[in-house]
Length: 207
Image 1 (cartoon, rainbow, N blue to C red):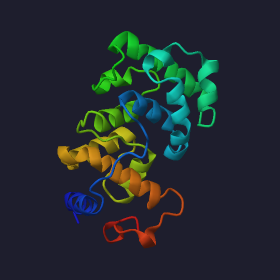
Image 2 (cartoon, one colour):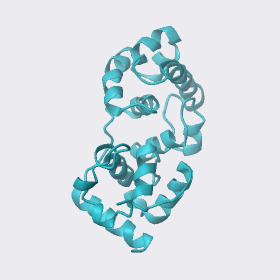
Image 3 (cartoon, rainbow, N blue to C red):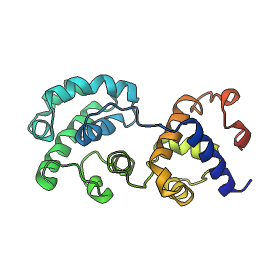
């Protein structure tokens, strides 16, 4: 099976069986999603979804968050990974949103990456989910699944991103990001992957 055939077969399976895949982070607007994605770095979406409701109630927009102190934000995020750093990033991010972008979350990848706490993965998530840009965010789940399924052998997240975007049609990239994440989160897990129950096993070179 060529790589092109592998992509086509796997994408067809996902399209047929997971046609409505979407992020599991809870949010009501672009600002809330940006906050949630920053908090989700090396942390589960489940934990972030527990943290964000009171955080958003206290800081409903960039204006309130930008004027907050570290001592005010920290108690809301203390249960996520790296809470001190993330609290600082959130405050600084909100400040730059106001000063540079009029409080509006930008759609441009480079503009997003200027924001404190926002790397390429986070920028791609926002561009894809909020603005339907044809980009694929590569987190640890996507990186692992892409390698195991033989979709990429790139040694860095950016190399994997390029491989995926080279082979996945633009109109499927936004949802393909979620397909790979959810497959990695629930089936092709880092430890003890559920290969026996995997519907993609017949096409998986990892087995």
